[in-house]
Length: 168
Image (cartoon, rainbow, N blue to C red):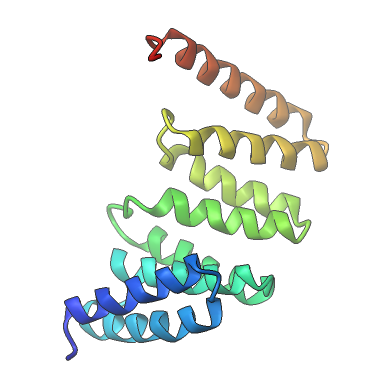
């Protein structure tokens, strides 16, 4: 049927196929999820954006960067049109940054990563990765002021981590 549950099942099947390195098969399920979610909720919806993000991921797995970037750009645009922005906005923007980075478009990557920065949990490993990606982009673009800013943010992050109690 054409229900939210059916769309979720299609989305999960696509996600599993991506995880199993079968992006072509994954796109089939994800496309069905996208169509259902668009019909049920419209495009400005977190679930629709999640499916679009998965569809983009399938293309990135095949290194079809133009398609991955186009789809991921649409994800970012949809997130930015929503108020409040969905809680997956940081991850969506970070994915766009990664795709640009893999195509040596460092300035575009940095712009996308900067959108992700305030929307990623500063306590998580993802935040460390994001600071590292940004630092690499700013090194490549010779933007030493922002590179220094990333180093300062990483130092502050490391100090917060060091202040936590040890768990052995």
